[in-house]
Length: 293
Image (cartoon, rainbow, N blue to C red; front, side):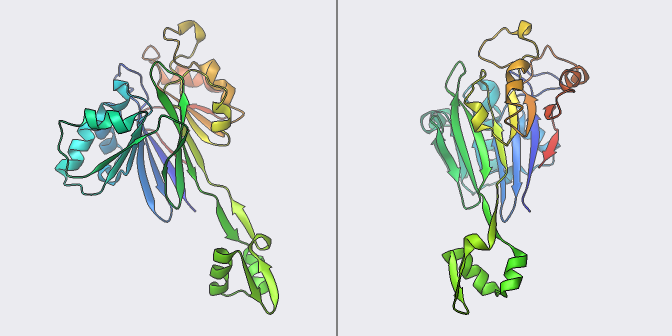
C-alpha cells in the first residue's frame, strides 16, 4: 500500500515570523519507488528540511507556484547545498515560465548536476512517470501563478477469490494484466471480469490565489493545502489572496483541507484552530507538522 507524507516547511506569508516560515510543503510518496518533491521553496527551506529529518539530496522535483520571493528564495541555498554534497542526479524545477525565468535566475551559479526547467504556466501535465502525475492549473494572483495536483495513477488489482477459483497461475495473472484477456481450458477470461480499480490518492497545493470556482473540480476528493492569508473578510488588505470564507467553499469537494500561508497578524495557533473546530475536515497547518494519508 502506497503512503504519502506531507511536511509543512513553512506556513507563513511574505514576512516570516518566529512561528511561521516562508511557504513550502515537502511530499514523500512511498510505493514501488520513492518520490521526494517540494511545492514552493521559501527562504530557510533547507533548515526546515533538516529539522524534519528529510534528506534534501533525495528531492527529485521542485514545483514553484509563482515567482514571488517568499515562494522560491530558499531554492538557491538548497541547490548550492546539493552541489556541495556532489549531487549528480538531474533535478526538475517547474513554475510559470520556468523555462525562461529559471536559467536567468541561476546563470551566476555552477552546479554539479543538471537542472531541467519546465514551464507550468498552462493547464497540463508537468511531470509523469509510471506511478504518478503532477498537473498544473493557472490561478489568479498579482502575477502568473498556478496550483498543482499530485495524483497517483489508478491501479488494477486482481480479485484474489476469483483468481483462486479459476486456478490461475502467477504467469497467467501476469499475462492477463498485460494483454487484458487470456484463454484457459478453452475459456476466455477477461481482465475486467476478474479485477477492480484502486483509485489513486490526490493532493492539491493552491499556491497564492483568490477563490476560484474551477478549483472545486480540480481538488475533488483530494487532500487540499490552500492559502488562507485572512481569517476574516474585514482583515483583507490585499485582494489577490484568499480568506477563510473563501476556502470553506471547498469543504464539500476536498476530502481534507489544510490552511496555510497564514497572515502574520494571527499569532495564536489555538485561536485559529477554534475558528475551524466546527468543520470536521478543515485544519490549520503549522510549521514542521507532518500529515500521512
